[in-house]
Length: 149
Image 1 (cartoon, helix red, strand yellow):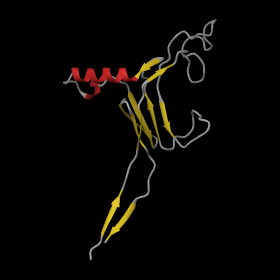
Image 2 (image 1 turned 90 degrees about the horizontal axis):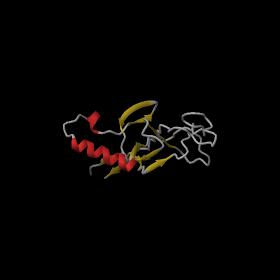
Image 3 (image 1 turned 30 degrees about the horizontal axis):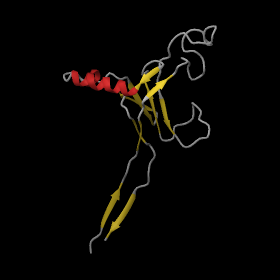
Image 4 (image 1 turned 135 degrees about the vertical axis):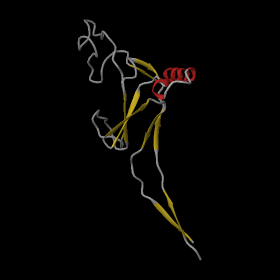
C-alpha cells in the first residue's frame, strides 16, 4: 500500500469596482476647502477643485471608521485620479481606447490612468490603475495536508 501526501495552499483577493465619485462641495476629508479660503466664500462655497485620490483599506469590522485605522488585510492608495467628479467607467474606456489606438506604445504610455500603490508590509509598488481595484489579502491561512492511502 502506498501513501501520498497532498499539500493544498490557497490565496485570496478582494476586488472593488468603482463607478463614479462626486465631491459637489469641493471639500477635503477634514471639511475645509481644498483651494481658496478654508471656509469658502461669503456663501460658504469653495472656489476651486480638489485633486482626488483614494485610500482603500480592507480591515476587520469596526462600528466607527477612523481615517488612521490599521488595514488588517490590505491597503491601496492611488495617485490623484481627477478632480471633484470622476467617472471611473469613462476613464477605463478612454484608457482602453488609447491603448488600442497606439499598439506600438510602451506599457508606461499605453494606459493613461494614474498609478495605484499597493501598500503591503510597509512596501509601495506603483502599477497602472485598474478597475476593478484588486487587492491581494495578506492574511496567512493555515496549510492543509491530507494523507491519501
